[in-house]
Image (tube, helix red, strand yellow):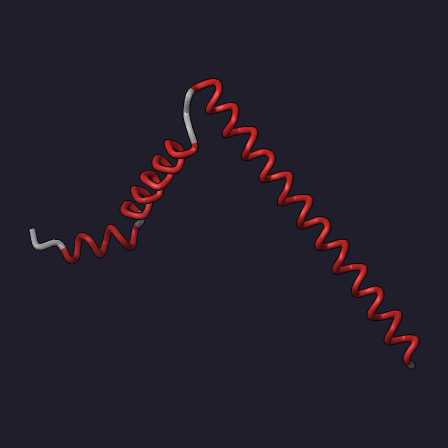
Length: 80
């Protein structure tokens, strides 16, 4: 009985380890890709991370404001 528990624990440990390695690999690939894109934008066009962040936040805020339920609430609460 103890050998079955040991084998089951080892199999689960190996599967969790393999999953963790895959997650770390994907994370590193994504981080490297983002870094390369930022470097190319900085060197080719002079666009820095701050500019991208500010533009991204501005665009996200515009999308939120134009979103259906928010627009309806704004119209309902409008006193005009």
